[in-house]
Length: 277
Ligand code: LIP
Image (tube, rainbow, N blue to C red; front, top):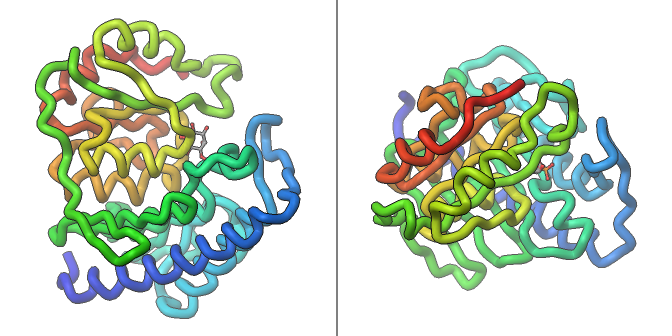
């Protein structure tokens, strides 16, 4: 693992670029947001997604030319693929929570992660409409930074009884495709046994709220690496646990993520149904 001084430098640049992109998202949100559809009618993309990605990826490629980049919209890189093989790969979701952004809701974020040999070690999630940025790096802890400069350390909750747990989940764009699990069975299996469920529409912010101790756990299916990489770093640095549905480590590329305060993890895994598809 590289020295912490490198991680601090990478984190600072990721935060700077995420906040710059956040300002552009805010500016573009005041105009009529032109919506386009990706693979399914539910999967939205806007010019704002692309503008934010151009800012973040352009800045990263300029600052770290020998690093690879995996970004959602593929504006400056081959879509969905890292631009080159390298020890270091930036993983970027320029606008996580696009549906919220289009519908005028505040839960959307710019998410920037950096992986060392495919293991995320830096995470930045900037929520412009909420006026906060979640920042962290391997071994350096994680913080919530407010627009007025205040900084709070992130720490997962201490909730130990499932009946007291506030949990979160989401529903994939591909949930109704043949062979896919629409997650309704998991909701039916879990909701009767926890305090309540939330579905806010941004996986990266859901992971941040686990790291902040607001949520006691979160799960979702069929997400891409850029939907989870940054938030997962923050959960780990805040003392939480991130796995796939089997309790293993295939959560980044495996399309199944479970995050928790650690104490509730095994019970959450036990109540989730085996993944179909
Ligand atoms: C979204 C995720 C959310 C999920 C949505 C979508 P996007 O990412 O953050 O958790 O439920 O289906 O995948 O598309 O807004 O970047």
